[in-house]
Length: 149
Image (cartoon, rainbow, N blue to C red):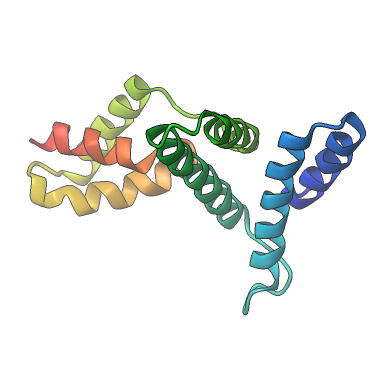
């Protein structure tokens, strides 16, 4: 079952349960998936990699908005954004712990023979493929810098 089908099914369940916050988040995901599927070259299909990118983008948007709302003292809007981000995150693969990321980065560094910070591009290229959707790239980048320094 594709992510779009899962989201559609969950939208129906949220409508029946009258979960408006969840419904709003799921509709946003469905809209983005449909938009990506109709974009030029997609042919109505969205790859799993593209689905992960869309979900991550939506979560990031919600978290950035939440931070702004909190800064401006709008607790009601902050809560809405945090709840929507939590709903969307349920569709992302489980995130890897920082310890596991560090372990895998050390292996990647050994494989590539990287020894200096200037080799970061090689390491990040392999790490991006290795951790696709399972780890935050900012955290991976931070760990790579620490390990190469």
